Image (tube, rainbow, N blue to C red; front, side):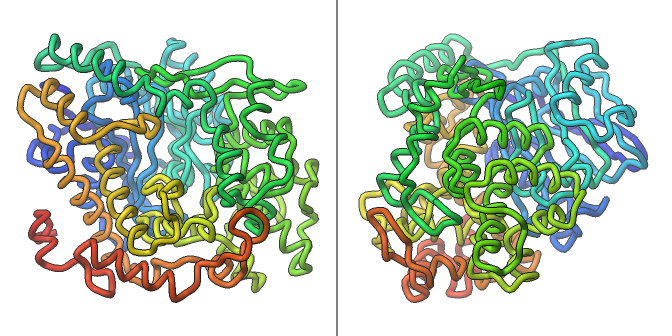
Length: 587
């Protein structure tokens, strides 16, 4: 089979059974792979009202059609489930080499059902698949777990997905780690593994991925590498990586500082790309990548790949900790314990703000590096009342301590590192994302007029549709100039049949609307498409947008425009005509 392996692995942890099923061919040209295909499988797999942490919830892991080939920046894979953090359907995708390795083993994806009666790991060695005892790995961090897994399978090149103590303890923003520094970061992926007593998945494969016309495919791959990938628009990923954004967002006045109080960090030089370059000791790439955007850093014995922009802000500027060594240590601890650095840094910043304002003394103060690093393990291990409180996240803290004015979350997912008071489009994107506050669904922060409500609503719609198909093709975000025409060319040569950009564009819209249908059935309504009161009521301080809010009136106007552009009514419900157009009427 061209591009696809034609098989999905079905794992039932309750009865410890494993089988394979043919890939649903009838879904391929509507949903393609990765996010779209995983979502379509998940939609049929569970009831929308399922408890995310129950055995009845399922996890779907899916590769993309281009994954495992030599097309550049196409190694990503994803996980779709119902989030324990937000209660919504969600997708989280990761890089590295696990996706290609799974295809080399012979599978397009994995569906995981049930719950094991003890801690286990899933072992995939080509067509030999088994559920193994993971008791010796209990309580271990992800770094040690990965070493143990490679030793257990007798292959140092094996790829794995693992959780640390945070996932085992059900922290709602626990993540799944891969190859030490790659994460399925947002939405509680690690908590879902933990809820099923699944410590890890380890995989090694000896196969390959077939394409229909190898000569044509290689010609296109080489053409696009030279003419579209390795261009000035994208090479920042190779030279600097995401730390380049530190100065950019600071100059734009949307750089979260002191729990989203300021839009400008006076001391950003301690964390910016220049500081990272001074600490850099090497680069690291994902499979099939020409950029190697991962920057290995070392300061005074603190060493890791990263930190990335989001971590530098949420674990640095937002806590008024402008010390790169401290942020490296924060990042490494989170990666080993298995926690999302965005949510973790965000909620610690909120706790510091609550302490400063006398709402609740968490013994955490802005700029206090020692207290900051100490509390991370308390959250992951649930070892103190403080740690348990912070594990509740921003919304939980707000409700328990009457501090909604200090919280920055949507659908209980904490803000990433772009302040919407200086970019209204980011506010619309956060509010309407299927998984809560997210910068990976649409990214209008660099638009020409960031306060044009109608224009930004349209930008968000287009961005969400494009992200839906891009992540269904398993294409990395850092191929910033990729188009559906390019994707269609590669798919046509790989499949041996014509694929058009128009088909892919329509699929992106279809995938977005299927997310919407699931969330509606799970009980989400227009009232859940909101921005927090901090953004609407508290003027941004410092930076070029000081004094700005995104008022309730402005936000509601933008939201209605967004719904209109989507073909939804004023309550955010897709019209029957729109569902028919997308082939979703029967779902």
